[in-house]
Length: 270
Image 1 (tube, rainbow, N blue to C red):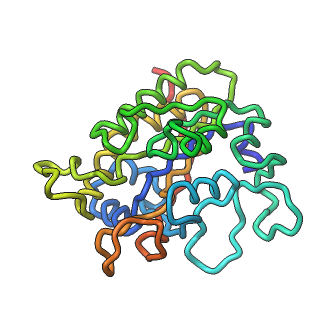
Image 2: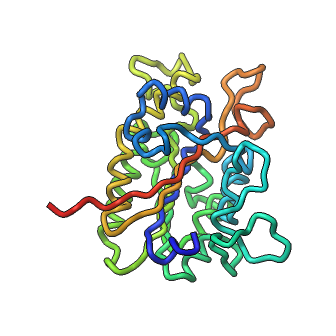
């Protein structure tokens, strides 16, 4: 990352609440083709979330603690604040001298942009302003939120606008928190009704919905230059697993998340 930062645009996408098992099943079954074509080897990497709910997990990620590989470490990190004794800061780590990665990238000349999804990014009140407040520019509206059946495509449209308005020479760090998978997600299953509620099946349908539109986001993020992308979940969620429902709890369905990192190359001009 120490050579990528400064030469590439950067994209971080968090698929809020996405479970690893659901993500892996859909990739193997060919149900998320647009995502799967970018996954190294066509599969998600299994990792452990740095937190069990959105706020905690994103605070950790914005400090440089991305989901950790689900295997014995140590695991060198891509990004790290400079502090003595860090055992996961390696030669290639991008080291920043600010309190968080977002301001560290801003200090390196990046335009930092947040396109929020769930309530912790809505800017409505002090708590909902903490995470988007890290960025130079933040966007949220009800159409991006959990109650909107078209949330992700509306977020992508805003991302396209952001990229189009940015001067060509300015590097971009674009963060998108995808709300579509978070409860409620029943409306992503054809024929579903509110009375049926959310389920593992509607969670999967929401990921298929995201996959149908994510190609536009990737195209926008790489439209100006080569882009380094990270797509991952911040935490999973339980749908009756061992009697548990939701997240902010210590269950395997919550702690185990999918992760991928890859390059997006700009298309050659016609």
